[in-house]
Length: 294
View 1 (tube, rainbow, N blue to C red):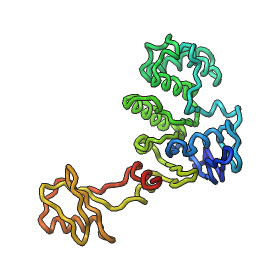
View 2 (cartoon, one colour):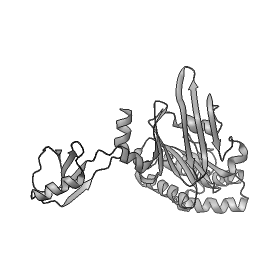
View 3 (cartoon, rainbow, N blue to C red):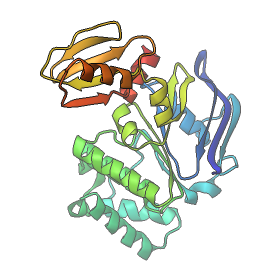
View 4 (spheres, rainbow, N blue to C red):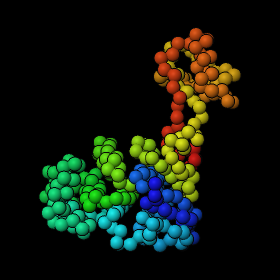
C-alpha cells in the first residue's frame, strides 16, 4: 500500500526546548494510525507541522507525496485539538458554511449537515447557537466540520476531548465506519484504551522520540511476558516453572526462563488441578506505555 503521510527525520524546537527529535514514520493508505503520547509529548506539534501551521526545523513532511498546501484541503479533514468554531453561529449554519468552504454546493451542504446531526443525535440542536452547547456537543460539531466533505484522509487531534464515555464510543464507531469506507485515519490521543480498540498501527512518543512504532499486535507480542490467567478453586503455588500471584478472580502465573504455556498447562493437568479458565495475558497498550515512559 502507498503512503498517505510520510515524515522523515523531523525535528522541532521552540526556543531552547526541543519538542521532536529526528522523528520518522509513515501512514499507509486505508490505515487507522494512532499517534500516542502523554500531554506535551509533541503529538500536536507534529500534526501542525505536517499541515504547515508550524514550520519544521529539519525534516521532510509529505501528504499524498507532496508538501501541504490549500489545494489539498478537499482531500483532508482536520479536527484540531483546540476548537475553531464561530460561537455566535447556529449549529446548522456552521456545518453548512464549512461544507461550502470545502466545495459542496448549498443544497449538498444542507443535506450532509442534517445527516450528520442525525448521526450524532443533535437534530434538536440544529437552530441552537454554538456557544449554548455543552463542551461535548461542540466537539461533535467540530468533528462534523472535519468530515462533512467526505475527505480521503482524517487527521484528528485528541478527537474525544470533552466527550463522556457514551459519546466517546459513538465517535470511535464513526472513525471505524469511515475506515470501512476506505478512509485513512490518523488520530492522536493520550488515552491508550481508545487506540487499542481501533488502531492498526501505533506510534508512541516519549521525550520527543518514537519509543515504539509498528503494527499494534506485533508491539503487544514484543512486550508479551508470557503471563497466564488461571481460574481455579484449588490453591496454586509458585514453583520452579512459574511464580503465582493471587488475584480476586483467580491466579496470574508468570513463567520462569523459557517455560512455555503448553508445558505449564500439561503440568497443572498432571498434578490434578481443575481449571475453569486458562488463558494467556497479553499486555495492554496502557501496560506498554507505562513501561516505556516510567
